[in-house]
Length: 285
Image (cartoon, rainbow, N blue to C red; front, side, top):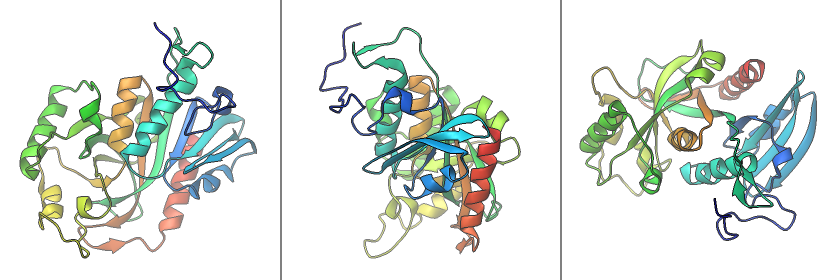
């Protein structure tokens, strides 16, 4: 295979990958991701030691040991556009030789676990609970640019949601890692997560700009295809799952349920809920 040009795989002067500012030896094969850069330290404070601490833009990385296991935690910022950068550059770190610029013959599959917050779309999802995204549906256009292969059921969900929302493009639907669900999320609420391309309008929040569809939140809540319905929404999971499938990595998104948009309530102990999820993941990965 031909070498990847400098304009496509951009490296920093020290040889690190462009946005993440990391070298291959800086990461573990098990990676915990968080959206908020301030949350990196809330994970790594439990490490026995931190051997790598690197920051560039919103991407902050700590690699160290938790009870003898080498782990990496990295912040992503918000949105699937950032996940596009994260997933491609993490993959490059383990599957491309930076000297020859050619893909390695032996591919490495990373284990990537998102620890994030989310809002519930059903009144039956309790505040303070932990939810694992068994599937994710993307309302963003990221997969308009990639050759994502989908199963018929996934395509059917995308078509039905496109019709329900009157969209000009078809949303994409992808499953999370079954092996990580069994290992890490076996006692968490199983969820179907809607990934939105924004926090305000796309999630049905009305401030001064208004909404083209004032019934958007109700449409999300009431959407059904057989027994399929959405449990929650956030801004990254579908990007993780689709790029994980394309690149061959095991990916799982876990959600601390800190808000319920249907009952219009917010968890008074949100920080405790997040910390409980962090500890649960550290013990199980």
